Length: 213
Image (cartoon, rainbow, N blue to C red; front, top):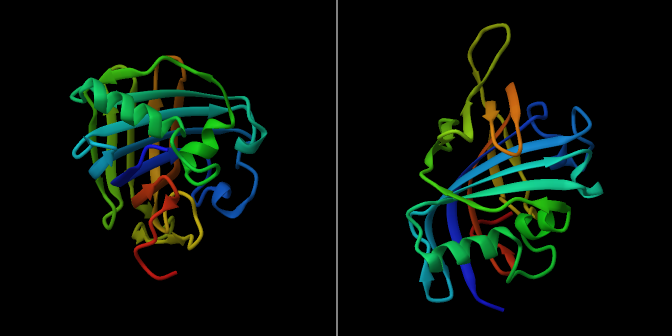
């Protein structure tokens, strides 16, 4: 197995209500799952290939709960990546070179029935985890944004986090509200839905647990 490791910041948005039932082993809010996940790698490697500074976006759709399968996915990789870096990122995001069930990418891969040809584009990504602010933009394909959830009575920011000591993606994530617009083979158009901001640290064996549960 090729050794790899990634430390990144992510902004994930989906069509579910705030909190996302998946985080609690519950069924999707609206019966199906539609999601966009963007990340910027702060430090990373795949064997001898460095991945520092690169960005990726995954656009995903399932007709029902994720575990029932039938999903579709489009992977967008930073156009600045070299051929070796592209191959490395596609291997990781496809769940390859990973212990079975160890990472979210490996789990998702088992639920997909159609994966479109990857796209290599300029990715505009920003995410401030503590402030719950960010966006993911790929011209012609993706435009998502995340912001703090607001109290419907006072309008003040409402802060809530999800702590998953045994999660396969993150250990702690800040919750927000999202706006999602996508084109291309998977189309979405949602407002005031789930947004997740997190620092992630994963390798072949899963989440690198660098803080106490």
